[in-house]
Image (cartoon, rainbow, N blue to C red; front, side, top):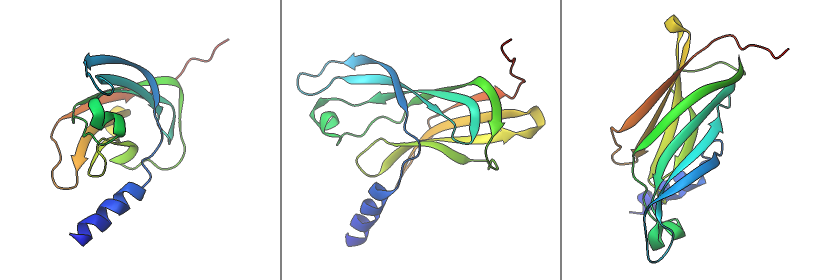
Length: 154
């Protein structure tokens, strides 16, 4: 049991990557006490690929536990990444490299976005999924961006 507590403490100390900017939200379930359950839409930029922004929608659990940050959010998420400028790379891209991570429970569950490069099709592929120390979820979503020239404003 002591080892499990040490692992949990170590997981809480890990950095969770770039922060997302909240774009908007909608309530899905009214709660008498605490915030409502909702779907949140967030945006984040790929830290190694300039010119790419990803939009993520995910469920956030409300109520008393959700308000205190103790609730476990559902594993479902949706992602759409888009080219928003000229694409350039800062550093070497590794397949399966984590570009975003957010805790979806107090300790054991996270939602992650990883990037792959499909060299044959010159396309960046982003995958969002949720995992847990003991058991993850097969639910996932994927999006792809073909790397195209970006027209310069005249």
